[in-house]
Structure formats: structure tokens, C-alpha cells
Length: 127
Image (cartoon, rainbow, N blue to C red):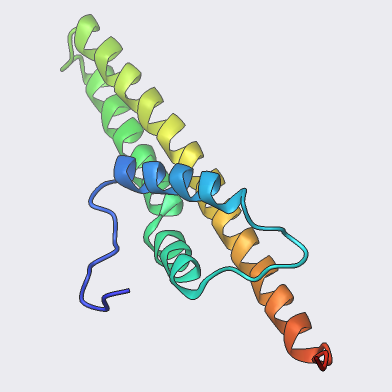
């Protein structure tokens, strides 16, 4: 793999699409026997590090507080309130997807570390 290629996603939707693609690709690897190729593990690690569901949740909480203040002060028309709530519900769903995706990546990377450790400990068969 070319080291100069930037593997970081460009957006949260790009990150989630990459996670879905990786999940499909990972189905071809046995959980208990095969370690992942280094380039695949690197992509997974980059994605897991890039996803920031905690930050997304903090942004959503800040947006909800702002909306609450605007509603309480009468600054927003009803339709604007409805639209803002819809957008926030979409963001909440995306945040949940990011939590799940990062957890899946981290679990698989942890499992891969365990497989690699077992492979190092296992005596090599002589042929």
C-alpha cells in the first residue's frame, strides 16, 4: 500500500460507508484462525480513530440546548422547530451508527491482536 495515500474519510457518511465495505470484506476472514492483512488492519484502525461519536453527541446536545433557547424565546416559527428537530433526529441516528461502527472495528481489531498473539506462541510445524 502506498504510504502517501490519505486513508482518512472525508465525512461521517464516507466513514460509515467505508465501515460497511470493510464489514463485507471481513466476512471472508475466519474470526478464530486468520489474522487480518496489515493494510486492512491499518484501514480499520484509522477509521476507528477517526470516528468520534462522543464529539458528535456533544454537538447534538449543544444544538438541542440552542434549539430549546430559541423555542423558549419565541425566535423560531413552528415549521423551523419541526425542521430542526428532524435534522437533529437524523444526526442522533448517525451518531448511533458511528458508535456501533467504531465498536465493531475496535472489537475486530482486538480479536485480531489476540489471533496474532496465538500465532506467535504456536509452535511452527516442520514440513
